[in-house]
Image 1 (cartoon, one colour):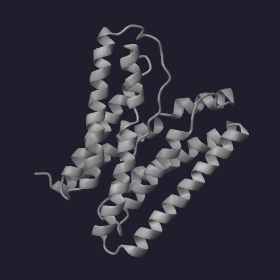
Image 2 (tube, one colour):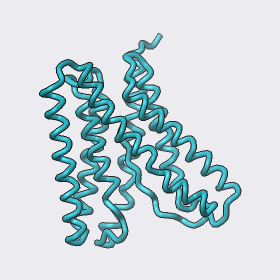
Image 3 (cartoon, helix red, strand yellow):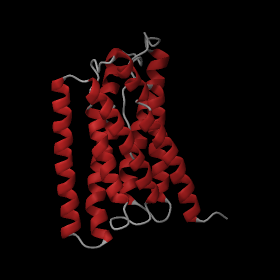
Image 4 (cartoon, one colour):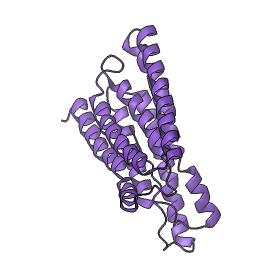
Length: 234
């Protein structure tokens, strides 16, 4: 019989693989930027937000905040590397205004992260309190990430077409949320991973139902829309 610890590690590894695929999904967009030597109308906002999301999850998974969370640290550490690569490419090919905006947002994020880190480490003692505060912050950012496709879903309903809705990204988001929800339910139970990824499961399922409905009934579904990037952390 497989122990809870082994089962949790297996599910976590699968979650790492799926999350890796999500982090890699914007690669075609940045290949296009490099090829055209221009960021065109692409925005760095999702990647800037994901940097902060990953940074907080790495902090959350450290032994002095929330023990036994190595797999949370590893995948979000990988995610940080991906996001900084994407932002570096964006910085190289953006105009001066775009570069200044990017650096300003990253500077604000760094100050915010440093303030939270310092506050938690200096004022909170013990992993239970630290897990509570950092876990809530992580959940807020993760839920924001999972519900971000709402704008695309609204467009699908308005146009009655799924051409602007990236199907495989929706599938990956659903599977990612499902996998990390399962991981959180296996002993030791992790309420903070559960909450945000439970929202991710619901969000992903709604996206897939919406896609199936309008793919069957909608018009102009054969046109290729831009892949809306939505990189995910845990």
